[in-house]
Image 1 (tube, rainbow, N blue to C red):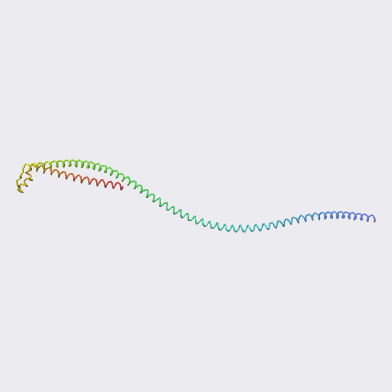
Image 2 (image 1 turned 45 degrees about the vertical axis):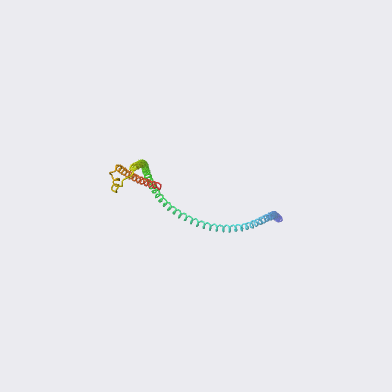
Length: 252
């Protein structure tokens, strides 16, 4: 019985020692856990403080971001309004430009029509200018011809005037000769008889020997004067025609 009790006591002691060893290990583990828990708690507190600081910074940043968000939102609203106003203005400008483009298109069509009309007028003016040029050439030729005719008439008039001057000089010489003859006859007859009107008229009648020659000379002089008058009239008419032609040319 003592041996059995001794064995049980040894077993209990061994169990006690094992439990003591386990308890000691648990104490050591607890001590290590406590120490590690304290270090972890310190780390957690440090990390918590950091997180709190980060949280404060994040809140501050959040406030800043909210303020920036509100500012950006206001700017966005303002930009949206400006964009809408700009879009409206651009639409109005586009409508005006389209209306102006339509007006310009209509004006271009009108200008094209006017250009066609002007080209037709220009062609008509060119044709008219060619006709006027031909008329001017013809008038110039006629003027040259009239000038030649006027020169011929002038030369003919000068020749006629020269011939008339010569004839007048001859007539003056004959008149002087007749006067001298009559003076001689008066000198020969100292007392001329009294003549009746019939005898005086007989002296001036065609029976006188000098009268037929004077009558022929007077007839010739009248014809010459008529020819001179007709020539001067023709020259006057030609000069008037030439002046009218020159005025027409200058006016053209």
